[in-house]
Length: 286
View 1 (cartoon, one colour):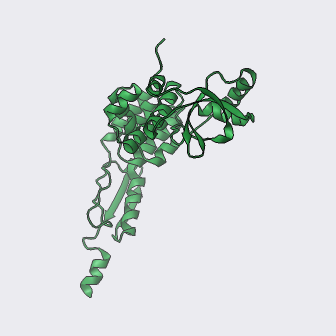
View 2 (cartoon, rainbow, N blue to C red):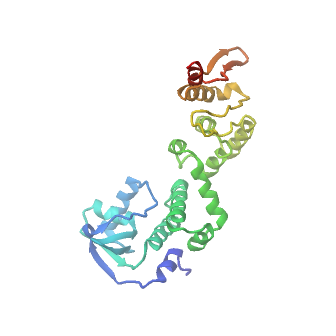
View 3 (cartoon, one colour):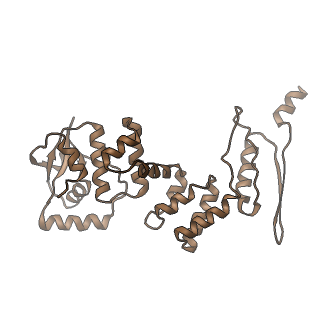
């Protein structure tokens, strides 16, 4: 039987004996990439542990005060849920980098991470421990291109990621949104995916149609309040974005004027931008 990737990583150190460690002496895993735990699944696991015990021990390492959990958080949580006093554990000596890698690999092999959690774990290993994508790929048994594709998902704005239900929206849906560099446009497509139950191909086709009207990301010069004008070709789709741009400009001191006319076949939008900002006129008079 082929040894699991995380077991090979552990084999590089000295495996300790299995000990029954009080749950109160074990602190949570600071490198746990998984953010969501299903309560129903935890209850089912807890019931199984009550009936049959724990078949596979958790992995811990020594900490300043007791032990720190590395792998087996679901078993740890289930034992706490049923009030079990101790848990069988293997004590391993490992540094932070190895502990983070083992935790990530165990979750990946159990397929317990959604694609945003996986991308976040990759980013943490790269940034906190100075790994390259190639080094990370070798450690976890993935291709470098697979890691790069996951990391691209983190380019989606946090507010958009919060709108995405990973059980419904696939990773390919999410990657399609990356072709649009306006958050408002991404939201429009995401709403359409939910409302019309678009598959990946339909989503990609919708994105391609909208790319002709794509808005360049906001660019600012040395004066933070002055934004480069945006050229928007489809007023119907980008009306909300235009309003937000005008609102930002007004807050920064640009006395912009906007008027809109909702016609039967089209929106008519008029925007007037003064060549001189308000505070400049005041200075000129002074």
